[in-house]
Length: 194
Ligand code: AMP
Image (cartoon, rainbow, N blue to C red; front, side):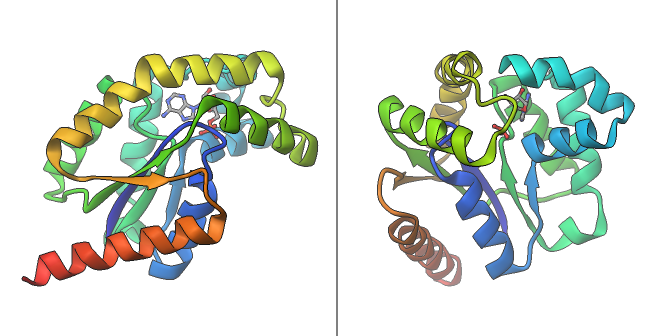
């Protein structure tokens, strides 16, 4: 199963992506996590992206697209994947389409975590206190939300036109959203069989 989760930070998409990864035995591919791991390991990539993450800006598309291309070519992604945090803009979405066409695969569903800015910001402030992520400063949170509206929302609209978008009520509890996702995926399965 090839899944994509889309939505602003604080929408709970990472949490649900981790659950989907476990339930369906497919890797959770999070670009944000990959960049943070590179920073923690002090690699060349890590050194390059560290100031970008700290500001809340986007890492250049060429770096991000090639990171995903490599990751999806690893054996564990053969069975499927749940992509989280990518694509963040239309250029990345086009990069993903090209990549999937090359390996003759398609997205099964694009789960869209819909919620208001107010709730997203409230949740991120909570996360900043709990996890102490370096890029959860008020400035970086505001910048990420601005980029989300400017660059990622057009990606949501793009997938809406393909009929793959599954809008979710992301303001609800983790459990309620998990149930909504399970129901949507079941429906997809039935449609695939019919
Ligand atoms: P996240 O963990 O998804 O909130 O991502 C944290 C940070 O990593 C973002 O604010 C960006 O600086 C960077 N990042 C993550 N995914 C991408 C992406 N697809 N394109 C560019 N930058 C990204």
